[in-house]
Structure formats: C-alpha cells, structure tokens
Length: 438
Image (tube, rainbow, N blue to C red; front, side, top):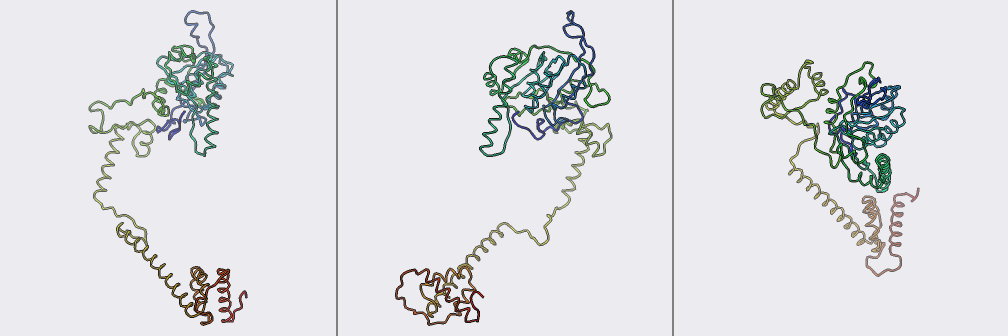
C-alpha cells in the first residue's frame, strides 16, 4: 500500500475492537459444489476461513496476521477442503506472502473466494488457491510495493532497491499463477491495475466467477463458545472503514452512510449535521455520560447538544481573564517594539562611549610620553580585551620616558609594540612590589 493513515490501514476510522477480522468454521462434511450438480464426488470435510480486514503483522483489531492464520489453520484440524474468503484492502507485502505460503503448504485443498475486495497484498492470497473464485460484483487490484521513509539520499536509494525486489517478487507470483513474464506483470503493477470479477478471470489471476457457499458454523479464533457471524454485516462494516485513499486510482466508496430517520424519528434540529456513531462510540458515550444501555444515537446527540448550549451560555455570562504568571506583565506590541529599539540604541551608545574612552586614555598616554606611537595598536587591542586592567597600566607608567615626536621606525613594529606593552606591564607590577610570574 502507498502509506498508512492515523490508524494504519484504517485511515481516520479507528478499528472496531468488538468484531473479529479473522473467523473460521468447525470442519464438517459438506457436499462439494460438483456433487450438487450430479457428479459422483464424495463429500469432503470442509471448513471456512474468513480474512475480513487489512493484512497486518500487528494482528488483532488492526488486521489479520500470518500468525493468526496459522493458528486458525491448526484449529481446523483434519479439514480436507478449506474455503478462504477474502475482503481486504491489502497491507504488508511480506505478511501477505507468508499467508500465501501457509495456505499452499497446508494438506487441504484451498479454495480462495473474493467476497468484496482483494487489493494489494490481499490479491496474493486471492490468487494462490487451488481453486480461486471471484464472487459477482467484486474487485481485485495489483500495484507496486510502496513505503514511506525519512533519511538521506543513500537511504532512499537503498530503499528503492528493496522496493524493486519486493515488487519483482509480487510480479513473479502473478506470472506463476496467470502466465506471462515478470516484466509484463511488473508493468501492470506500476500502472496500479484494477480488475472486475470478469477481467480478473480473463487476466488469469482468478479461475472463475461464482457464488461459493460457506461450510461449517463460523466462530472466532480463541473464543470458547461458537458465534454465528453474518458475513454481509462484517463485509460492509470493514469495507466502509478501509482507507482506500491510499491508492492513486481508488474508486469512490460503495457504502454510503445510512440516511437520517424520517420526520418524527429523530431529535436533531432541521438542517443540523448528521452524526453517525458506530457501536463502540455509542457504548463509550453511554459509559462516560451515564446514559442507560438502551440510549440510541439521537438521544445522545440531543443531550450533548443541550450540554454544549448550557456551557456556551455560562461562557457568555462571565468575563474570562487571562492568567498571567507572577512576575510577568502583558505589554502592547507597539510599546514592546519601542522598548526593543531603545535597548538597541542604548547598546550602540555604550559601545561608542567605551571606544571614545579608550581612544582618549591612549591619546593622553602618547602625549605624556608614557608609550610610543608604535605601541598604540597593541594598547587598543589590550584595552578591548581588558579595559580596567589596561587603564591601570597606563595610569601607572612614568610620563616623559618616550619622545613625543614621531621620528620614524622600521623593522618589526608589531613585535616591538608587544614588547613595549609587556615592558610597561612588568614595570607597573614592579612599581607595586609584584614580581611578574610570581
């Protein structure tokens, strides 16, 4: 599949934990279809396995895993014929292939039946049966394996190679089942090809179009007591929740939401938006709000609407004051901008004053004959690093020791300036009775 939604392959629709996605039937002797037409074929011990949901290694309400299929096959015991009914939007490629190999390795004859949809990885399962059947009005889709990734260019190149490998593996399966070359099936995958029941048979992926009856009493894997499951209900609930927007060429949903009740049958105001709750949501609302067990969606909507109206009235009658943490205050944005401009101007002025003070002090030392002109740059740099320390040195130097008239200089002026600064520094320390390096 192309991507995963908020709830993986369910999109924005949260999985329904109240219904199983994988069910199976107790094996029993069932009359094979050929026997009903008059052929002398003995009855076979037959069971039914339904895969009604995404193919997902997480299993449970998220989808059908290979592990769950393996457990269900084990519980089917000595069934000689297993009808695998499929209604799935697909899912994880490797999990789908694992289910295919489980079914192929089983000793029973496997009859795969598409009850609604067999898209993406689910098409692997549909096509792998000893007998494969498209129920009337069903669809099948194949496409290249897809994923999503965060990483650098090398990671994307490596992932592209892996996707090509997985896609080629799918094309090999289709070519094995239907004939043709891997390259031809890979091209159909890249085009995201959708098949009706008839065209799926024409392509060779499926063998026939027919209605195949169940065999056995369906029950949920892991349940102690058998439960009869209405396959139509499960199919509609599952298909309505699939996130088919994952596919580039997905058809419009075939299961629109039910219409609102007729006049007198609802408590919703005329023109109000229709709220369609599922069973899980209604149960949760009953528990959280304290409604009786028989409260329906209309009753819940009316109560929630009334509660929201009371809350709005209470909100209008009170003035909400923002809570400001202690030590902080709200400031108008224009005032804040002025304060920021003033602060920046203050910083600029402080820098200017500091530079002026430096230049003034060094110029005074030059005029007093405390330092040579060649030392000026060095004293400026040292002042910028340590204004107070450099000023103390200049104040401590003896005036008149250096000629104030510039007579020219040559050689390493920068080195001599540094030496003059160090000499002045040493003299200053000695004047205060401090030996340099002590």
